[in-house]
Image (cartoon, rainbow, N blue to C red; front, side, top):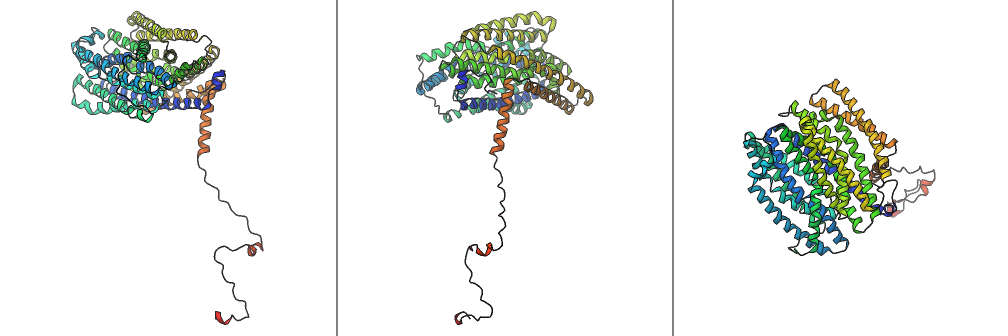
Length: 586
């Protein structure tokens, strides 16, 4: 969550308190919604793995999905949004709403035309293109299945291109709820379609039910976001102004952004393609580990980077480098606070987590061994990947994306070289080690580049001190988690309820140790999150309506009751004894 740090810069101190609270609230909402969508994605993977295990057909689907996903990352969705948001924000800051609307409308038409043509080429040439990503391990039947699945999946590129533009507009207006919830619905639709459509296919063709589900889910995701545009005050116009210099500005930014943001998809496709050199099960095993790895990544680093990006773009448009520098450094420390302990958990419990999540149905012990090996090595790159995401967004907000582009290309080369050198002696582990090394190199290069670009310190001393204390606390977390799991696993066995108890209690116990260490060692970000949670709980308690207490009136002293004025209708006094009433009252 995004909160202010103890060592605030003057620019940050002058920032309105309402803006900081709004950023914290948006980060919390986005983090929770994204976390739910990641959990739903994990459920989707569990259902699919129980049906297909780590079979060659599932590896064919993995590659058939990753190729259009790579095209999407290069030309649509997040890449387009990252290039579009700074330009769109700058127009709105200048008060040029009409120019901003015309820019978005023109881009929408360009996206539909350009991505539609790219999809047509890939769909028509799938039989030739897709075998380029598989090795001799795939036979003719698996290659044909890979090509057929990709033809079903490639239309998602156009849908995600339009969705990326819509999400960029909503994020600029600081509307994050629907874009965060839509992936949750996407996963639910896929699972429902997969379960319903699977009986209509047989053999390896059952994978087509999964592909149809992905296409249906992507359509629903776009339909959820479109109605929100009028609510934030945006309207599309039938405009196509190709000569608008801002269109060229967006595409000029988009070229390096596509490579920088697409690096994670490049790495995954490289791992899957090289995985076919290990075995036909390896691509699916690596992808299954990647899904667990992306759960904390999506909950924390993606949430922080997405919510901070419009703020960073706003600071950049105002040339407030102090505010931008402080916001970025705070975000880095928050990502480390959340991802370093997550890496410790997946590192020590790689096999138990994999067994609990996947091992049922067609997913057996050998599948668990392959996936847990990949997950163990993926864990080491988790904090570096999160920091890379925020550093890249900082470059994009400044509209200076060429350095991260060069670094992304360099890290991709490093990944390929290391993977090729290590896959023979180490198998799946060697492929994932290539990803770890490339992420570390990318993080170091981007930190150096941002420091030069901002012409000043990046609060490096405070960041290094916080990271050192966080890492020490994560070591305690990892040790406590493993020992508690080992004791419970030995005592309870490995039935599904026993695994849930042993893994869940171990993680909860380790988390308690971690929180205690972070608070006792006075890590500023941890203390501020703790204070913010306490403040929210106190505000919630104060906002609850209290039942009014019954006020008991004091007893009336003797003699005062007769003197008190009577209320209501006054009764006539009773007749006195011994006297006869007047004649008129007889």
